[in-house]
Image (tube, rainbow, N blue to C red; front, side, top):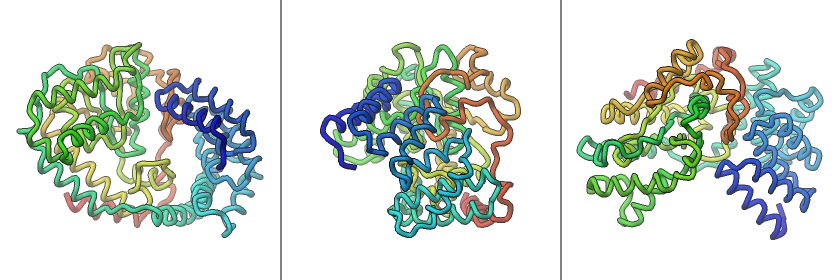
Length: 419
């Protein structure tokens, strides 16, 4: 989109505010941008995204629809609207979306977004075979746009685990990082829910997905002129302590009001060996869910970034295998620092699981954590609307598709056989 300098400045400032969790400020800046460029639908989409992260679901839906009034072929607006899990499209909107999905003149990024949006709407209508077919097409289109090799990724993980041994682990002072709670998982495993529960506690700030751990490691790689994890073999206790303090310095803004904070950046699981060598006092929550549900939920999601594996069954299975392999390795190195949190167990017995989760983190029980959906905070993930609802036991999707998911089941079985 063509925009002037002032609007670009507002958009940059809004993006920074959103990154810092300052969603009121982000929304204000985006509204200024809209006032200056009222015919730009993507600014409306950005505002809708920010409103959704803030928990203003109805206002977000209104902005997505406003964007569609400006540009009825705007794929991101359709995907944003259809992706609100607490909303359903109107009948006329579904009809328009089906027509648009068949338009061969639609730009490929918009066609992909429309495909994911239509699949969500068809699933809401219980037209599972049609939704499945649409997802196969949309995912195949998205996969062709991505340069990612499952084999190369798995080899990279295996090499890292081979280098990160007990000799490397546990070098910094034992209490360093006690204020940090890492939440790691595959996407769509309940990590946002887990963080929302923790953030409802008066001692914990939910910082969402932070890039600071990767940034600290990248800084050290640049300083040494050596790639991670190669330099980990030569890092001593002073190095790990220095890196741990650097991480705490970078994330201190999240602990101005509360003494502890979370970090749920999705790919932090790759760096847990370094994270716990730097911050031995930190807690790690490993969020787990039924593998089929995880994989199918990922396949139904058009990610904004950071999930190149999500658009192919074999890629999904390989990534899930690598995650499980890595977490078993980290758990062997740091058995007292990692808790496995089952999504299904949390649904079955919320209070018992929440009490155990808080105890593991060294937090006293607080009943506010049972009412996590009422917590007022920014949630900057695809689960933003979902975690503001009470726990529901009907979140499983795989069984609804029956034998259609047999190819995904087989891909997961092949990956499991590699263990």
